[in-house]
Structure formats: structure tokens, C-alpha cells
Length: 164
Image 1 (cartoon, rainbow, N blue to C red):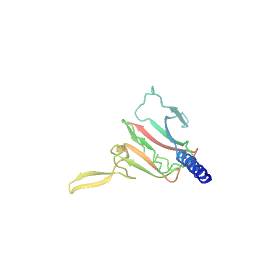
Image 2 (tube, rainbow, N blue to C red):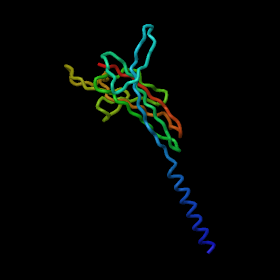
Image 3 (cartoon, rainbow, N blue to C red):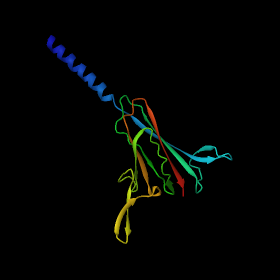
Image 4 (cartoon, one colour):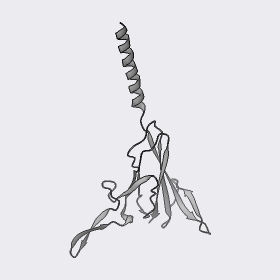
């Protein structure tokens, strides 16, 4: 009888531990925020929030910020937040933040393929050659995290587009 009680207690202990271990996981949420960059008469930057009523003008620049927050109880591994380059805009080369990423990758086909410098095929008199795609052709970008996102931590990623 004592052995049976010990075995039952041991099973209950493992079951309780297994439940706690199963609930220890990351819980990452992403939030996107956009702001139109305006300049005052002195050239100082002013950020105006993008809303559903925002009317864009050709040549304006919009800065997008993606905030990744881990509300879970364990680190989030292999984080790769993605940002879209909206239709009617062009990515501004060199504006993707790198502080929280090992590297930034771009797509010219809506996220089917990714590369640090996507290539396009160009027909020449000597045949087809590959050359780096102009950043205005990018449709998406993503950040490949350099490490884990700790529990209860947040990190921001940003990039800019210009209205065509």
C-alpha cells in the first residue's frame, strides 16, 4: 500500500511538472504603427500618425515600426517579423533598422523567396544576366533575429517607404 501511494504521488508530481513545462512557452505579438514624416520650416522632423483617413501625397515618406513583444514565459527563438511594402510605395534603401537583427532580407515576389540582395534577370544582347534588383521593386522585408526574444521583452524594427 505504501508503494502504491508513493507511485501515485510520483505520477502526480510528474503530471504537475509536465503541465508547468508545457505552459512555459513564448507568446509573441506584433504591432504595426505607421507615421508620415513631415518637415517644418527649419527642417525638423515631425511624425504624423497614419490613420484610415490619411491622404498620402506623392513624394511623402512613411516610417513603419513593428514592435514584437514576448508576453510568454520562455524565450522566443527564430523570430522573423515581416513588413509589407504597400502598393503605390517604394522601399527607401538603407532604412531597415538592424539593432535587433542579424540581417535584413528582402522579397520581390510577395514573400515566396528572400535574399539580402534579390536578383532579377535582365535580357541583354549577350543573353540573360542577373543583376541586383532596385529597392523600388521590393514587395516585403523581414528581419532575421540575432538572438532570442526574452520573456516579457519587446523589440522594435523599422523601415521607410516613399509614396509614388
